[in-house]
Length: 243
Ligand SMILES: Cc1cc2nc3c(=O)[nH]c(=O)nc-3n(C[C@H](O)[C@H](O)[C@H](O)COP(=O)(O)OP(=O)(O)OC[C@H]3O[C@@H](n4cnc5c(N)ncnc54)[C@H](O)[C@@H]3O)c2cc1C
Ligand SMILES: NC(=O)c1ccc[n+]([C@@H]2O[C@H](COP(=O)([O-])OP(=O)(O)OC[C@H]3O[C@@H](n4cnc5c(N)ncnc54)[C@H](OP(=O)(O)O)[C@@H]3O)[C@@H](O)[C@H]2O)c1
Image (cartoon, rainbow, N blue to C red; front, side, top):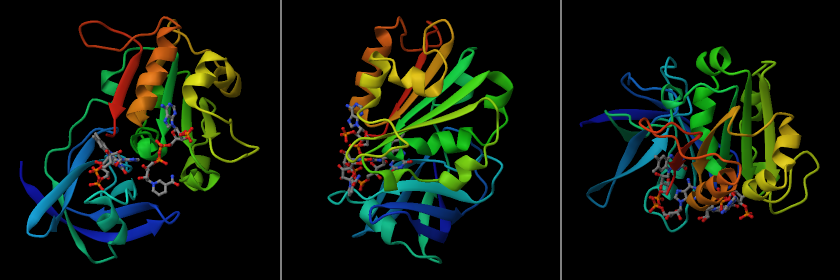
């Protein structure tokens, strides 16, 4: 693995803690849903963290969506980068949250919390989900309504198969479900909001974001007879934990 030099083209601030970096860097081959390590030199050390690509693979400008973890070493510095500043991008994208690893299904569920929406924004802008699935449901759960980012991009996905369901957990918001994803899987509110069945016969579920959500959602899905997908033991759930 080697490091490539990237230049920040834009750092968009959605809220005081949410930002999106557009980066010009040498072309990288990756699959939608994968991540790459990005890094800064801090106090003489290269500090690197994985970030999912938001851009689809054919887009030459790299895009990453991040949150400031105030006590974290890297994210507060990434949030402060301005256009023209440098960062490093690893040369070896990786990750299994990709449609090539997903078996046939009628409905693809893309479940996320917080910045976990990032890899889905790449996947949704490729041809594969629309060619392979009758329904594609994007679910984004955030604490506050202002964290429902990338609305412009999502509005442009004018596919009849597409459903977009949101959760806002820490304030009332008329257009979103309240509470958390696992509870809404259990009590049927998620299925009702999407208007499609969530079951082992029809669905494959991708989970991305908060590791506790991944565990709790997988447990709720297990109650519906769904299990983790493995190449040698096909199932219905593919996960990527962000920490
Ligand atoms: C495969 C993979 C892909 C990732 N993709 C992204 C991405 O696209 N966008 C992104 O913002 N982060 C992503 N992360 C997390 C990212 O790598 C860093 O951990 C994060 O940017 C914080 O870095 P830090 O050095 O400031 O703090 P760290 O020391 O890395 O983390 C400190 C703590 O912050 C919390 N935390 C870390 N990441 C997040 C997060 N994303 N949301 C909420 N709390 C968090 C956890 O409690 C963690 O223990 C990904 C992680 C993995 C493993
Ligand atoms: N979001 C902010 O306002 C903010 C501001 C500054 C810094 N940060 C930093 O970012 C970190 C949190 O990031 P975030 O807001 O993206 O995180 P998050 O805690 O992962 O919350 C995102 C969504 O996931 C839900 N969730 C949490 N645990 C879950 C579980 N076990 N099962 C199902 N859903 C679950 C949350 O619901 P609940 O609300 O019910 O937990 C919320 O709706 C903080 O630790 C902090 O360092 C956040």
